[in-house]
Length: 336
Ligand code: EPU
Image 1 (cartoon, rainbow, N blue to C red):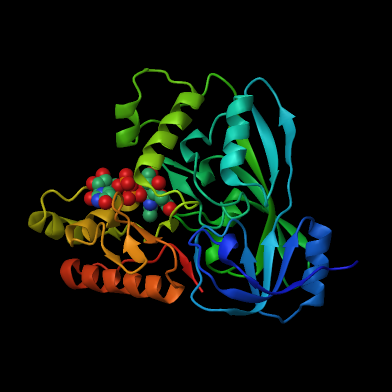
Image 2 (cartoon, protein in one colour; image 1 turned 90 degrees about the vertical axis):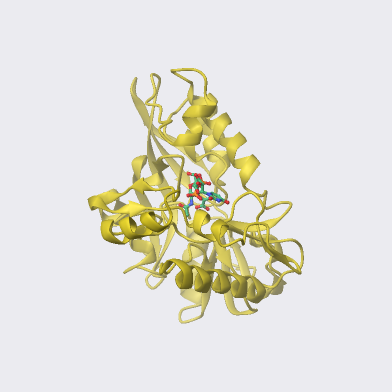
């Protein structure tokens, strides 16, 4: 098998932050056979795995091999009057998959419209928005061991999903490459979820279609979140912190307007965006680096920011939040 590695190429168009760093070696992968061969030939090499490049901040040139997953295909495995099982190749674009589902009238992913990135990356951080998480429609995924090239199927329990979290970010970090994902989707009448504040307020109909829900999500997201094709960004840069009830109560006394959402086991999730906004960072800009003017959780590259500059701003925000609120924010974005 002839493997077409490219040398010293810019990764600028392969990451949604639009950071211009070089990778020493690069290959786009269209099939699992090629992936297996590439891994076998590059055992021990430093590997950067790219899907949509939408949850990644690159801070320096990469001396190893960048593998970009580009396999395609959406397959209906089975279908009855209640629903369908769909298998999707990891390299498919997430939002294109959502649009495909809307066209077929398969329900379950409509709240997740317009999330940037690839299908294969979605389980890694258990993408979520507007009251829905990937784990709710996930059946299983196939992933290739980086060491042996063998493909293993992971069911939902094995993925250990949590808030923006899974086993692939923890004990199996950098050990597997997701090659496809299977979803369980519904057929009409769909279970609609508009519990998330802004969503139900914007939808007039009491029983909206999944297409209406998706359209509304698209409108809300487009108004709040910058389009990476125009302004480089990686969505939420920080995770929303989850506090114990005592810590939350103390904070709420000091800040009665602090929005909050109940979380598991009596804990309380609060929006990091509110904390960052409160500290006056919203709309902040220095050179080409900044905090988006409509969503304080999103850091942006207005053109030629370096990854190091964005990381510096992220650290500055993290320090200020810790100093003021005694909350140590976690990065949601992977920094390399
Ligand atoms: N808020 C502010 N200032 C801001 C923005 C928000 O004070 O600049 C406050 C508001 O009170 C608002 C609350 O924060 O009610 C929540 O804001 P928003 O609805 O925008 O949601 P978020 O908690 O900031 C999360 C996800 C987003 C997802 C939205 C909608 C995380 C880290 N982020 O953001 O996901 O789209 O909810 O469900 O959980 C992503 O992960 O990249 C992402 C964009």
